Image 1 (cartoon, rainbow, N blue to C red):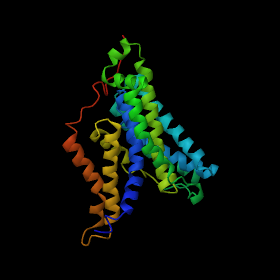
Image 2 (cartoon, rainbow, N blue to C red):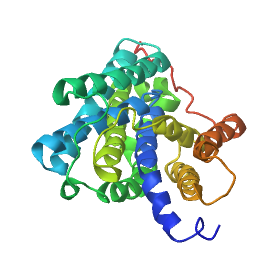
Image 3 (cartoon, rainbow, N blue to C red):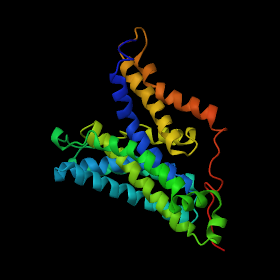
Image 4 (spheres, rainbow, N blue to C red):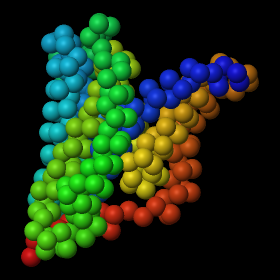
Length: 290
């Protein structure tokens, strides 16, 4: 157990929590504006795949990261137009994007690299191991300040709580919601890029492995607040880091049982706390200007 509780687990926890936190903060901005974003998984996959491919061809991880952000914003724009402009069911649209992004990277990878399993290996010099982690944790106080201390944050929260009142006050609910969803696409894509050109050196099929849904759980557990969401992400990150550390340390326990710890924790948290978390009042409700 001393190996599990060593100082290295702190570093592992931060690394594992970083993509969760980026996706969760993006989801927070979207859902605070009133748009359910269950598509975080798909947005992370878009960012991970695009960043890996562009970094491979360009030889520059920053260009790859920017391309990944662009792909996340593009996919988020599809979600935004469907939900805000055409009043589509937000859960169904998000689920469709998740399913779509499970297949598109495989298709494109086969066309570009003649293999559907993974993209080519990226040289170590072309990786960005620490930048997304710095961005993620620096954004927590920034987003808190924006939400609670700026006119934009007030408008964003109003669009998710009482869009009728926001509209009466002269706020464009549609514009605010578009902004929230597009920002969520950018942040989730950075989280995905961190997986492929930060923690790893290539994109592999379904490499997010449910992290978008864990980020959504952290967002709910954190009651749609930046600091609490960060703490929830650190909790889930610690669970996964501990599971990695425990493999081969605890005798007579199969590796598969250890690997499911983060997912079991997610289900337990959602089952125990989702009823106590109050979502924004207008979350998931389309708004039509009268």
